[in-house]
Image (cartoon, rainbow, N blue to C red; front, side, top):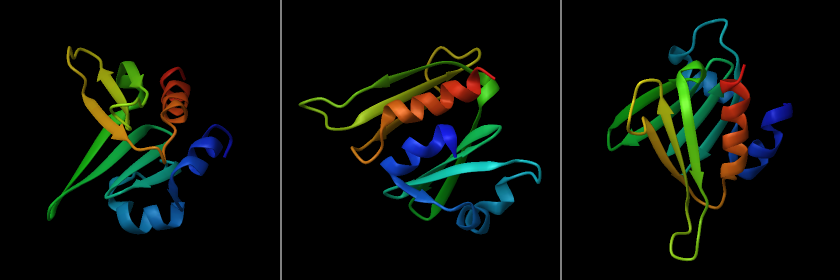
Length: 123
């Protein structure tokens, strides 16, 4: 698992088998699923090509993909005394505002999420 080992231990990891069962329609055949994290009602999936956020909105589900090659910058904000959640912001090429903003509770190490994204964005 390498780059994903720390991240997998910091939140509820989901097996590749379960991810393929639940979200198989989202992935192309050669796409490799490396890790899935369940955070409350949302799921974050890392493949060899992209990050997929599964966001439950009532009875609707939004599937949002960010291809690593389109990431132009990202930032993390750690938790503090007045806000216990950490935050990740991702900008994609050509956008002035973040394309993706996500808060993480203490079960997810935002530094490890950032490491994974940088690992793939630099490839």
